[in-house]
Structures are given as structure tokens and as C-alpha cells.
Length: 263
Length: 185
Length: 139
Image 1: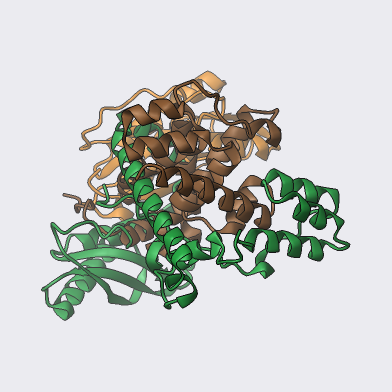
Image 2: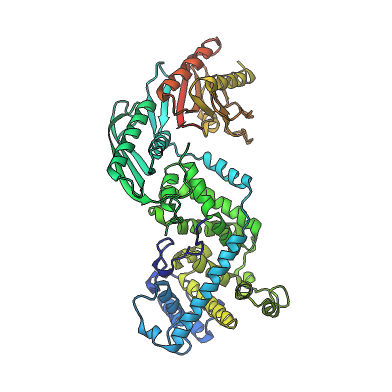
């Protein structure tokens, strides 16, 4: 389990979650006009006067603008809570004096920060309290997954009988490349691809392999070893004419480290 | 002996799974299952429904992994699928899903009674109660944003409403929760 | 040949494939049954595929081959698919091969074995095989 399961949202410029939308009103989708806009606004608990103003707005754009104004308006003409929250999401960068130097806005920011702290704790708690799934639950998912295996293109093998067709799937070959690369000490395959028209029996193809290298291991010899292993396996298991195997070290990893977890 | 994937980064597991590596997919699933289930439980208010939603989400994740352009962002991406499936489930099991009906907060005097929360005297417990007291749509928007980190546009699409409505609901939820949590200090 | 005999033959072919050295697993081609049943004209019989096209679950969809640790489970429908028509008999199956063997050679050996068996059936015309290797590895 990730050591910090609460960091799923985009706090502090964290890349692991989807980008938070900006407060840009231009991003709003068209809302219904007239009475619907009023109902909308009332359902949100916004000020009734503004809600009616939204309803009275002649165009959808005007209604949107009224609602946006209502959402943005703070009780004392100060900074809206939404803006403070977005500021917090951005890691309080760049420094905004309107918030940081204003006692009431700062107080709201700190209150929001504390709220999030408790919320993170609560989530951690809930995650820890979630019972591990029954083995059959995972098994069910995996058996459904297997039904949708990614076989990819079919790569022909020589057949000794007319009308009998023998193939190896692209999915099988990729699995084979992963195993070949993984078997090299210090290497972990990230992705691989067979480039070329594999359907033509004598067509020339190239193979691209991206690996992660164990920190401290010499990178060039490792890549060479992976290349050799992949070439050998492809010769043994396929009839592909492989012009070259390109091994790229895309990442570096350590053993017994905390999970990267995408952070 | 197959390589040990338990220490592999999310991005590596996601890339491999997208290319058909079932073991990598299983590892990715196990690693984030707790978070996904807790998230789904918040959104569906039912552990049983959450398990079903997460199972459906898992299959969808397997299917759609090849479309993920940034493997490093896989966790947030998976959470988005979990919320999508959670809402699909809630809608299918509550056909009379009138938004007004869902706005009702819990009854006073019950397990969520604020007086009882005082007795427990724990901020986390207080937040739990405060969340339960929120109208359901506000609670959902809060969860989608604060736990799932989802964008306003995605939240609006999930709830079938406008981005402006989402912002309004979120503002209300934040106001209520900050006010109630400050009372705990 | 009636459906039941054909079904028995399909099961036998599956076992023959599984026994071939280097074969780790024999499994149903996903969607075989459905595709064939839609396919059509002049079909005498379609059996097998074991993909649960009848709505039942065909066990785990695989038969452990020689040298694999998993016992052969008994699927409710044979794994190997056979389409028998007036013009030809087409046999379809997917296999997984051991990483210690040579894939192409194992594929040809399975073809030899199955076609040899099919040649013994006078009722079946022009037998041919559609075989795919869908996995390579120790499992």
C-alpha cells in the first residue's frame, strides 16, 4: 500500500491527480436559463436576490455571470473561500498578499488547512479500516480481465500444411520481451513495441524496449544485456526478422524503497 | 521465477498493464484497492455497493489503460473511474433519483446527533458527523473534489449539472465544514 | 457425424494438444462460438470454443498441458472449436507455450498431431487448423 494514500488529490502541485480546474468562468458549461437558473441558485443556497437576478437575466451568459458573481462574492467583500481554496491547492504560490496579509482571509485559509488535515486523517483511517478483499474477489476481477486479453496483431508462423494457419499473437511476443528483459538482473521492462508490418512473413521489424535500471548499475552494459536477451528469445519463439532491438533506459529504481506511488 | 513487481512505480505498472501484463495490473489494483474502496464507500454510502462499484471500475480500468497518456497519473485516473462507476451504481439502484429527495440531511437525535459527537470529543469523529449532516449532493461534490481531486468539469459531468452549480455546492460544503470544524478547536 | 460425436472429438483434440511437449496450456479462442454461429452457410455443425457462448461458464477456459502444474479442469464445453461444413472442417484453438521450447516448432507439432487424428475420420472433409500461440512462459 502506498505510504500516503491521502495524497490522491492535486494538493501542492502534486502531479498524481488530475489537474484541478481553474476558476475561469469560461470553463463553465452552458446552464439552463431563466427559471432553471433561479432554481439552481436556490438549491445551492445562494442569496435569494441574486438567485432571482440570475433567473431574470436575459441570456444564459448573463445568468452564468450572475451565478459566478454570487459564488465569488464573499460576505464582507473580502476574498471568496473558493479563491482561498484554489490558492491553497497551488501551494500558496505565487504569494498573494490579498490573502496572506488580510487577517480574515488568512484565518479562513488556516481554517481550510486544518479542515483538510482532519479530512486526510479521516481518509487514512477509512482506508486502514477497509478490510482486505476476499481472495475470490480479486480472482473474479482477474478472470474477467483475462477474457479481454490484449492479443494485438497476429504474427504468422510457417505452416507445413496447406490451409492450416499458425500464428503467435503480438501480445504473446510482448509478454516474451518483458520476461526476457525482466530476467536480466537490475532491469525492469516498462514498455515494448514491435515496429513494422508483422503480418508479412518475411517483413523486417524493429523492436523498441524501454526499461528501468536499478540505481547504481552501469547503464550501457545493462541495456546491451537486455538487447541480447530479447534477440535470443525472439529467435527462439518467433520467426520475425528483427533488424534491431532498441533499448532505452527511461527510468531508475531502487529496491526496498518506499513506493513511488506515482508521486 | 517472475520478477517482483511489488516495488515497481505506479507508472511502470500502468505501462505494463496497458500492454497486457496481467500481473502488473493485479499489483496496481492491490496497491490502490483500499483507497478506491474507501472513496467508493464515501460516494455510495454502502460498503456492499462500494465493492461492486470498485469491481466494475477495475474492469473498466483494465480496458481503458491503453488510453492513459500519462502513466504516472494513473492513481488519480483510476479514482475518476471509481467515481464514475459509483454514480452509475447509485443511479441504477435508486431509480427515483430526484435531486430534491437526496438533499435531506440526516435526522437529528440519531447517530449523527451533534450532541453525541461532543461526547466522543474527537476531531475526526466530528468531521465524520459533519459530513453526514451535509446534504448528499454537497457531500458528493466535497468528496469528488477533496478526496478524488477531480476537476470541476468532470464533477459536473458525473453529477449531470453545470460547473457553476458544482462551484456553488463546493463553496457551501466548505463553508459549513470549516465552520463546524473550527468549533472543535 | 452428429454434434455429440463432434464434441467428443473436440475434447480429444484438446487433450492431444495439451499432451504435446512444450504446450503449457490450451485455451478457448475468445468469441469463437458466437462468431461461428453467426457465420453461416452450409454449416453442418459447430461445436466447442468453450467460451460460454451457451451462457454457462466453461470452467477456467483452459486445460493444463504436459509439464504444467495445473490439473486439467473439466470445462463444460470442449476448448477446441470445430466448424464442420460440406466443404471443410476447420479446427480452432489457442495455446500457451513453454519458454524453454521453440514456439514455432511446438505449433507445428500440435498441427501434425491434430491433423493426423482428423485424417482418421472419414466423415470429415478437408480438415485444417487455425492455431495461435497466445502466451509464452513458465505458467
